[in-house]
Image 1 (cartoon, rainbow, N blue to C red):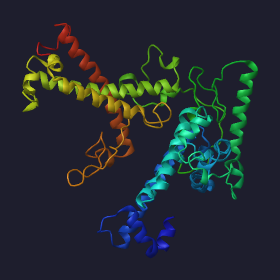
Image 2 (spheres, one colour):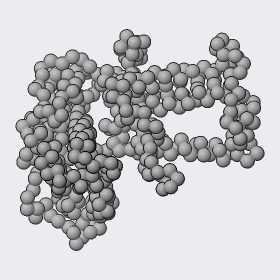
Image 3 (cartoon, rainbow, N blue to C red):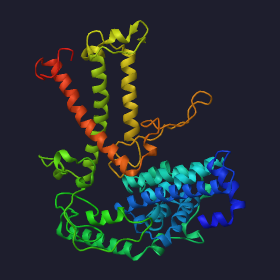
Image 4 (tube, rainbow, N blue to C red):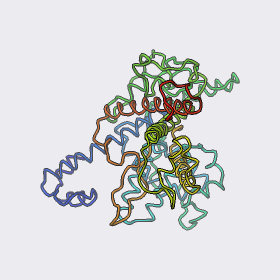
Length: 450
């Protein structure tokens, strides 16, 4: 792509600058080529990250080789232009047989890129179809075919189906060139499918619940207490593989490593080990562990804010002015920090609780959910670009000054570990403040101001 851009620079340069909304001072050839190189690197890194997540979850996209990447774009167009207009029966067939590589993070990413391009070109109809396609894939990732297999649910979810647009109805049989995934899937995919079918048949025969006691990719033995989809060695080798590298060769031996060992947060305090004396991680699945991690991050952030607020209030420091008509910040804090909440006007309490509710709603309604492949604790950009003439730049809610954007991946990992540790300390701290207030002398280091 880079070579093609340079060979056709005069033709592609104005199109690229308009697409990227580049600053006006980007006029010389070298600057534009550097901008194009940076764009390609960003594109490749993002695409690679989505593909690796699909590989980890054993989705069909994880078995796509670099010679088959073109299929993802073809299948996205096939999905938008034809599959969404199929009958219910043809739609389910397409999902089960044709669309495998885009039913995951990779396909969602490609469709988001397509949606953005259509929005920039002002093609609202195609933009809406791309958004509907993402919703259908998210529904499949969340619930499988539980809802999509029901005609009534399908008609509600697919806003471009034959029920709502009968004049645009298409049959799968009428598609002239059908790039079905099953026609092009590599041998590794069919090997994986046979292995899963054999395990399923054995379960039915023995009447037992399926247990992933061996890696579903290489068959290596793993922990017998944690359900997982890929052993530590296979996952490690895939996660560090080069961009679009072929699938790694199967291994026959893998060290025991549970899913919890892959989470960030271990440190020198515990000798680099997971601190879990009650073996809670051994009694729950991966989804519950992700819920625990999201809760730890959430409560740690709240506790850090609470600890700073408690210390500030205990020192007698308040905002100037009034929190409401006739109610100053100083009067709210007059009886001590512990009593401040009761002095806040009812309307103020309602605003605080409403903000908490909206934040909870936004994180819990994100797709994919953090218990199903999403990132726990991640808060995306605000969903609007501000008010023209008053506040225009689109900022990240959790990183308004963009400090994280300039950091390397190693520095970001260090910051995430620091956030976890500070959050844990803050949770202990705020509990100590509350105990010290209610039980004077219980925390000797705290004086009566607390």
